[in-house]
Amino acid sequence: MCTGEPLLLPKHSSSRLRSFFEKNQFRTGYATHGLFPYRGKFHPQMIKALINIMGLKPGDTILDPMMGSGTVPIEASLMGINSIAVDASPFCRFMTQAKYDALTISQKPLHSALKNSKTLFELFSKQLGLPVSGSKTRNGSRRSEFTGVKESITAFQSTLIDRFLGLIEGVDKDTLDFLLLAYLDSAGYSERSKRKPPIEQFQAILERYVFVVQKIQYVLEGSESILAKADIRQGDARKLDLDDEHVDAILFSPPYSFAIDYLANDSFHLNILGEDIERLREKMVGLRGKPLKEKYSIYIEDMGKILAECARVLKPNRLCSIVIGTNDNQLSKALGIPKEEVTGLHKIIIDFSKIRLRNCIKII
Ligand SMILES: C[S@@+](CC[C@H](N)C(=O)[O-])C[C@H]1O[C@@H](n2cnc3c(N)ncnc32)[C@H](O)[C@@H]1O
Image (cartoon, rainbow, N blue to C red; front, side, top):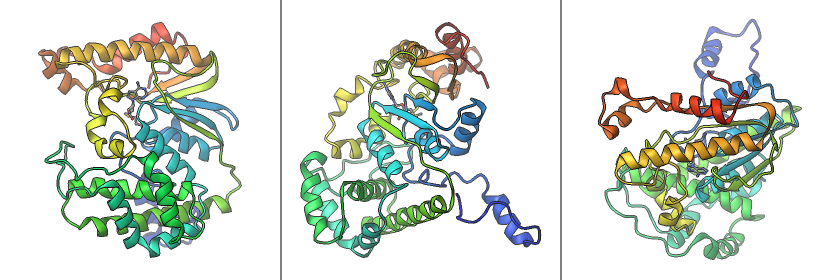
């Protein structure tokens, strides 16, 4: 999947070729996983391993109630396992859907988009605003605001499709969303780095996106696997819109308390999607409350609600895997206690799970 080459090398292959495969075996960008550098995303290989450990079979359904960039639904789909994926952020829903659709998207319009990349960039930046080069620091905080969005996505989507139609034969909503994801990706790079002018950044990223699609579709055509369905939604993990005992497994990674401000990180993209960021903050786990102590206690309360929901929607005697870091350093500062005395987030989640998830817990 990584390279389009068979993974089992013939015995007589050269040591150079062998070392290429050894070096690249842990690369995480295969399929469409590498599109968009979302902070805190899973390693897809780990997800594949956990899905196997949980004993899922093709046709089963797995839930990720906090999907982020969609590693679980995309990996599950490649393994023939259906998924339901939820995130409070409309940008995560948009990004995951675009990455999932890219597994089967029509390639012809993408090649013609590549040929017209300069005009596309001009259209996008006129409608959506242009990021200011180097306006964001490496840790995500902003040095200055971007030049501003002219219209929200709902308002400009049909206008853009009309304009693209004259330029790209066969363009549809999936193509537009894929190109938009590439534009947002390049906008993020431009905010962080002044190395390339935004137009060159966009062209380079679009080229890579189209190459990724070509490569994964080539591999999928040659394999016998059938992509499973992913139901990708915007929603709240604390109150899932799912029936009781609906899914065969749950696999997710919640925010590590307040380690990352996902809204500040994605403000450019959320603005473009027409989202009211302050209203969204009310739903985001780990972002409510001031000072940090209060933020932390609201976070713990929210995690209790999420685990109760997981217990409700999971079929009896099935497994829920939660991937979480301890975050001891930040918590020790926020709570004003030495690092050694902080109860790690993993311990809190394990204790909660023993009560809420009873015997369907696997501690790794
Ligand atoms: C650690 S990230 C998940 C990353 C994901 N595993 C991936 O591979 O990209 C945690 C996610 O939780 C989401 N989130 C925060 N509060 C939420 C809520 N109430 N309901 C659903 N998702 C929420 C954030 O938007 C963020 O995308």
